[in-house]
Amino acid sequence: MSDLAGRLIALTPRLRRHARGLVGDAARADDLVQDTLERAWRYRWRFQLRPRLGAAGEGDGLFAWLLTIMHRLHLNAVRRPDRLELTDAPPDIPVSDDPGLRRDLLQALASLPDDQRAVLLLVGLEQLAYREAANVLGVPLGTVMSRLSRARERMRVALDGAPATSGDSGTTLHRVK
Image 1 (cartoon, rainbow, N blue to C red):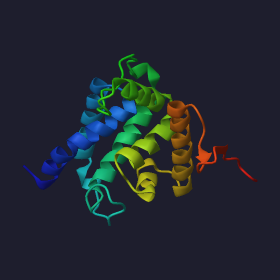
Image 2: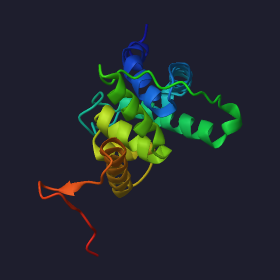
Image 3: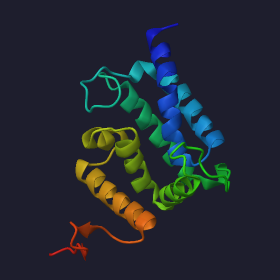
Image 4: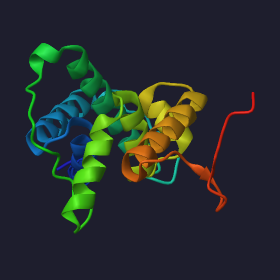
């Protein structure tokens, strides 16, 4: 087995975890991972060694390259909804032993727009640096930061029922300008 094949196999659980967060259920996540790995293998000659961009993944950027492929495949599937099977099954991402908290978290995550959910999963779950997430998504760094901020605020409101507050004073933060 080649070195690349071994590394792809080793990264499969992380890809699967990320795919489950993107698509919402195990079967579709497995399909997305399979498509990602197939495309990566077919175009392995395109992969270039590059300096490490963030703390997550391997130093040559292989994991970030795979996430980029996965993100693009997911976007293509979202743009062609006739090819998607819709399901009411919740994603089976192990989050907590508390089923109520797990359900609330998954519902809040599912309610996010796709672009915000993708950034939140890359930075929060996969622990990519902002710049690395920007490279994976093909967007500017500032876009990653604003999407992440909006996603975190939406999650906070969905889970706590109230927007972010400033310290212990209980006052709501407002934009000055």
